[in-house]
Image 1 (tube, rainbow, N blue to C red):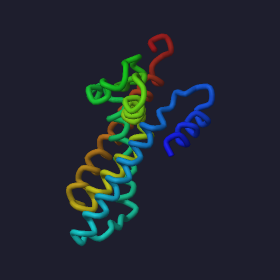
Image 2 (image 1 turned 135 degrees about the vertical axis):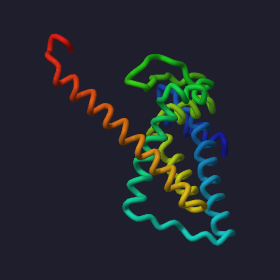
Image 3 (image 1 turned 120 degrees about the vertical axis):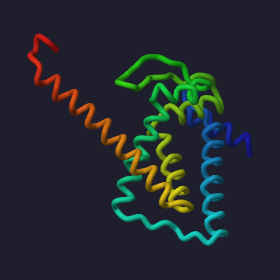
Image 4 (image 1 turned 180 degrees about the vertical axis):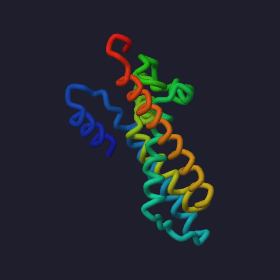
Amino acid sequence: MYGCFAQQRAEYSGDAPRRPIAGYSVMLTVYAVGFAGVAGIARITHRPAPRMGSGDLALMAITTCKISRALAKDPVTSPIRMPFTRFEDVTAASELHEEVRASGMEHAVGELVSCPFCLSSWVASGLLAGYTFSPGTTRAVMTTCTAVAGSGFLQYAYTTAQQRSMPAEKR
């Protein structure tokens, strides 16, 4: 069985065996087991499946974006990424560009923790679990994160408006 997997992995990677397929497989398994575990606990404790209205869904989408971006790009969260990434540059206000280092499982984790798109599934699932077991607290967290995301957007809009109103020679 493993030999077949190794052959498929070699065929998948072509000339660039960069992708740590085994590491990805482990991470997918952890995600699936975690998700199934939360669903099982919800069932055992007779928690109904959450039914979100459009407002809560919007809060969840914005919160997922904000938390995923903060975990993957924020300088303050760089200690989480540091074992798996290497600092390259500052790419935007309060955002870092980091390169994934190592290989195998460490590389797979590095790709997860440095990619807001990759993290979003994990974050959204965590929020859904929170919403299942403690909807009031989770809604408060989502409201706070949405306010922070909105504030960030307004900060950028204000700065852009301010720069556009300056004479060209002072920019």
